Image 1 (cartoon, rainbow, N blue to C red):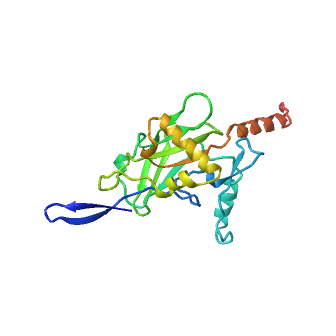
Image 2: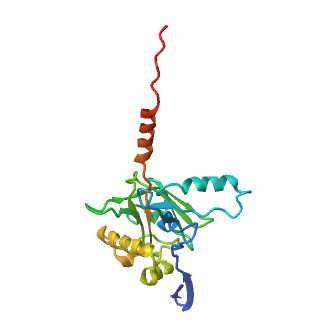
Image 3: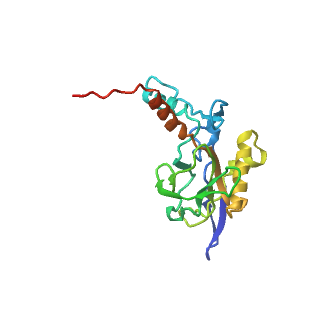
Length: 230
């Protein structure tokens, strides 16, 4: 998609590429994390389980495959995840902050918790934006990652919404479309109009308390040690 303008007295029309965030439901997803990379699992407390695809060659990439197999046992993503978004052009990093990129809790009941970002990094060689949540998120909770048009490209123009994102919201199918519609409504509750959303994702955080509970139960089951007297 191109925008056209007139160049001063010469009247020469010049094309300026408009920058968009990518919306890709495959792996690696953009934005990430995304519940589109999970599957339903009734045995999990969240009702979901991470389902990242393995590399095609698990002989050469044995350690990568093993790491992913471990992640695929989890019932959600990290409670302070590394967020990543791919763009089709350069952006102005100074326009990225907690007002233009943030997380909103989709938990039912109560107010919508809005969480900002920190540790923002831009990789110019890949056009990928990285950030972390500004605080630890609630466990086994759905969150929407919202990116707004308040972010500008390197020329100072506002980024435009991802075309694929708009098409998916309008004509997509499946449960993840419903998740993203929830994200749009939650963004509205945080004061962001749907037309100002450049892209969004929805993800579920993992359950953490059960790890502590299992450690506690293991300690209780362990036989008591007798103290030796000298």
